[in-house]
View 1 (tube, rainbow, N blue to C red):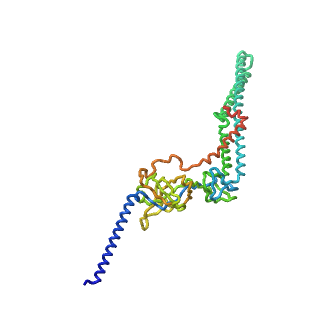
View 2 (cartoon, one colour):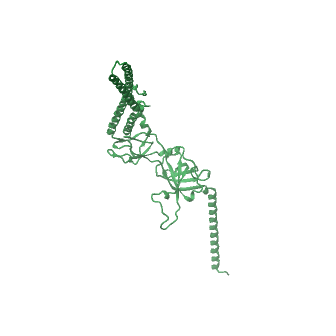
View 3 (cartoon, rainbow, N blue to C red):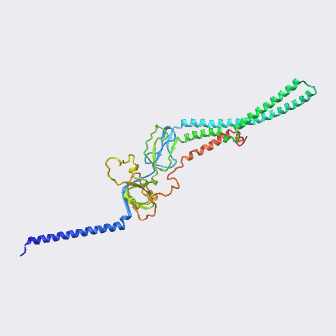
Amino acid sequence: MSSPQPLAATTQRGRRRRLLVLLAVVVAAAAVAWAAWYWLHGRWFEHTEDAYVQGNIVQITPQTAGTVISIGADDGNLVRQGQPLIELDVTDAEVALEQAKAGLAGAVRQVRGLYSNVDSGRANVAAQKVALERARDDFKRRKNLAASGAISAEELAHARDALAAAESALSATQEQLVTTRALVDDTVIASHPDVQAAAARLRAAFLDRARATVVAPVTGYVARRSVQVGQRVQPGAPLMAVIPLEQVWVDANFKETQLRHMRIGQEVTLTSDLYGREAVYQGRVQSLGAGTGSAFALLPAQNASGNWIKIVQRVPVRVALDAAQLKEHPLRIGLSMQVEVNLHDRSGPALAQQPPAQPAFATDVYGAQLGEVEALIAQIVHANSAGGAIAAKTP
């Protein structure tokens, strides 16, 4: 009769063997499932949670010094391009503008005097020519009379001296006319250098007056307002920022080992912690960074000294977002995002091959500030040019 202990041990070993076989089957199945998942799906996608919303932070700075008397928007307010944000005291600027207007008017009148001097010089030359002809004729008559003994040699000498004096006077008058003409040659009043210099001073004064109103260069939302009423500001001092939230993008930091098959133009799926799966954004890879994040840090790592430990570096990848989705589910600067890049399309380049065809971001709000001053200059020039009759006159 067999003992029950060896039977129990055999039963236990059989159970353990079946468990090991089952575990091996589960591990093998998991390995096969993972391999199948990786081959069919995983190898075509790269994912990171180290991604954040970025955008253009447009600094609002004054272009002229002044004292703040009004603030037109606060943090979180929507502002339109060209909308006044800060008003500076304009008393000094208006005084300088009036002085520049008077200076331009005076310059126009002085140039009118130069044109009048040219006309006077021409008249003087004509008169001197007549006097010279008279002196020359008088000398000829007296020379004939002196040959016949009708007049004395002394009277002939006086006639010769008068002729020489007339010639000298004509020469001096002609030289003076040349000098006067040199001041106005090939110009009209509006294009005369003195008038142009006065007009430039008027433009500068006009700009200082216009720049007392600090306007929004772009449409967006105000952030980081630090200016206060009564504050004396200097050119370039940051007063607030305007952020156009409809133009944000995502900077996704991928490990260097994830960039092998990443290309510009690949499709990207993004979700945010703000909306979760409620809003799934579609984007495209816009560019891959030219260096790692640590390489451009304020204090880059110096691996040539001290103990060295290899750390997988991360490279920023910029992802452009769909404007319609941003309008429906707006994002804010700095929000966390989950990014998944679809690697199926590998036809695009890893780095940009052409420079941009147009500016990445631009504004034309400042170019309009000179629009009114040109009409003002033309008006002042016309009003001080004898009704404009001399404005088109050439010497």
